Length: 376
Image (cartoon, rainbow, N blue to C red; front, side, top):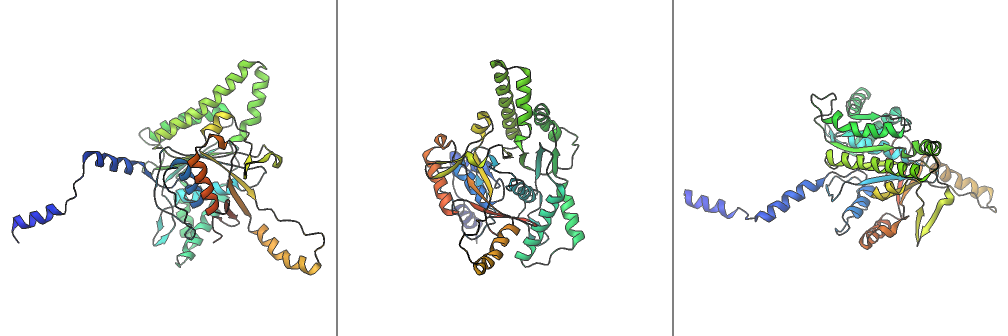
């Protein structure tokens, strides 16, 4: 084959592309980011809010997705509840687990992101021991699912320890120190020489655990300072400063998602309906509520009481099934429709499609480990 013929064949294999198409391809690549949480039902819900014009996919079999999503704006996700001990913290443990662990350990697929998590534990209640147990259970589940031998205990311990080095925990004790901590994060993570071991990893998310921690403290401070209008203006300004600081962090850290939880300051009676959909009145300030992309309500799956006319035999038959729900720590997450008037119509339609695909919400099992969307 002559050089001319070879060159012609190679040239025919070249795809021509305009400069505008090249820019669009680069823009798409830049917007392509890993799933914010690694939990399929939650990431698909965020996709509905961030890209309502894009047809979302709701797989019903494989609950471990690794495809990248197109993000228009960095998401802000909030977990809340109408009762205590609902399971919000368990979800945070699983999100942290998926962020810290690698994609593979040897040949075992762990579905992790090998990244960094910034955790602001505002109530100082998160347990590293519980997180360790969740990570251990996740590794065991992934190994058995892929039909690989479970790694020896010392090997798992070493893997978990190496991963936890990239969890950076901050525990501010007031709203003022919370704001100062947010402001100091860029210098801590980006100033050279680096004072941490995570410089080579991307930041997966900023987690704000228990945003309600300073709620009563701030209200008392505002009441003691003054009862006039100026005090309320100052408090609103403080909330705006917090939101602005979080926005700035998202811009600095490559548009990373923010994942927050709020304690239950409401009561079950605060539950209402927006049309045919459940709604829970938020207690956080309006500045924060308008900043959140979507709020997910987490609740325990209720075990109904025995019917008054049930026989002893029927009660005995139901007992095992009821106990199974309690032992497995079953919870459920659903979209809060409070304030849905701010949603665009295509978002409403997308949420309805999501609810139809997931049966109105997603299941959570929290015992040794944490499973979302699937019990296995």
